Length: 171
Image 1 (cartoon, helix red, strand yellow):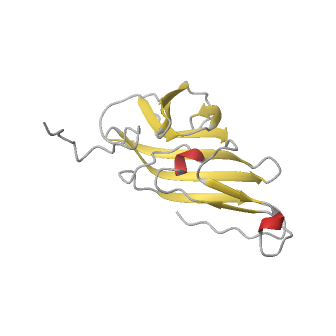
Image 2 (cartoon, helix red, strand yellow):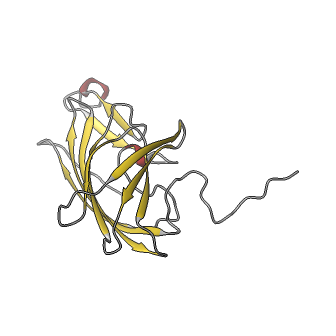
């Protein structure tokens, strides 16, 4: 017997894009090469496609320190394990009038979307190197977001970095 699939559903995401869909995120991250960690603050702006007080995001091995609305009021949140492939889902309680959340977080050393190179692994042998590879579903390991093609958004990004280094960012 054949299994019928819902072609409108992304089976590789826990995000509730059909209900609340992020259309913009503003990312501010600091790179810590010594700890091999990103310390981030991300503001997610979303629209409601239908009434709901729950925003569900994808994440994997992230440490969420706090979640607030844009006025700095702390919001209730919970992280629930899904499975080894999908990681976790970050569930944020959002009141009816809230259309933006701010998430304070940091990555783990096991972030699958980040590759850290020591200076001796680089061509110049002087500075460390970091690059991200967010495909197919690895963006969730360094940014809490709706990690699915159904969430089309634009971004504003600020990266704090070391002197004498170059940042390249493409979303």
